[in-house]
Image (cartoon, rainbow, N blue to C red; front, side):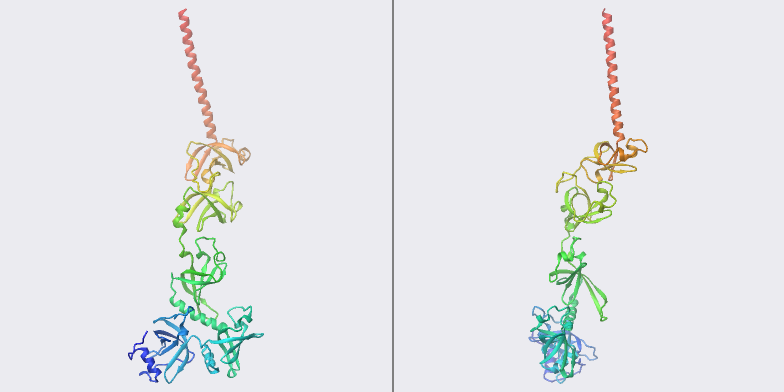
Length: 498
């Protein structure tokens, strides 16, 4: 890009300043070491030109420049564009020419004087680790020897300090005394400073619903932390997958590169320095297809499926039918008198079930145990149970008000019918447990059905049998009477012939 040479452009103003010409209207210059915000106005071949966003009563903003090295990204490319607002530190001022140079770091200081300026500006400098002593690292910087305490050698614990020897890294000068005879450095401070700068750059472009790539830095029980570029976001377990059983440890590992969507950005509590923090919530789930969109294919009503128990509660068990799709096997569908599903079911157990109903809008699936003999994938139609039909079943439960019969060919609540005491045909006060122990096979007549209710009767079967016996006896009696009348007539005819 070539600079516009008109008098009002920054490029022409900078050229004039570099020749020692003062601008027509003086502006307040920032001080050495001052941290400023600046807007990029031009990207040159070797430098980036900016206008410093500083309060002034003048009609011109102070101009400055940065070396390309100060604005390169991890890939080595220029990471800013015209119009971007960046944060930097004043590293050099030429009062005569009005030339201001900004930087993100001091680079390798040329001498103690420049190192002292970096100390005053709290600007990172390059240093080479030359050795390790009892308390930390020996560092060569600006031709002098500095000391970095081991607690300041990194953000966390350094297991092998000797592995840092020979490396050139950035440090912040935390002490500069006796003309450079005592120099104390902190690599941790330099890392934190770089992180804050990268964080500001990332936040400036980060928006809700944006899809970004980051690196997993830590995995916890509640989720994973992802570095988005100087700032971390939380990927909670519930945002990992539609599969509710998924945990961060089962899906991710530190160092993994992941593409996530930003779900929320909000202010967090103040940190130890009293500075405002930002809470960013991320999601992997929002980038995946919703398995419930295909639930009509994966879990059709009446289909026999094999699932695994994911959770057990008092009222039943949630069975995972496919990743992200669970159905409820209610405790009332279980054989016998079960007050708590945990009495007979456990997490991880494999079950064969039938899909009773699907509510896609509410994301609810009702399940029942599959009838014995049916294979996975089969359609469970079940026996036709209509009013007046005679069914056979097994005593499944005994209550004070009656007994429950599980109709043959069924499992679960749909095929379980109640025979009230009044329909048992037993004397009042009879002990049902003795008369009808669990597992007893009985035949009963269907009195009511529908709405998930099935009412049966033993008494009706007995009444039908007695009625059938009576009808049979009456029919035979009537036939005998008819036969006697015919005999009498024949006898009369024979007598008349004589």
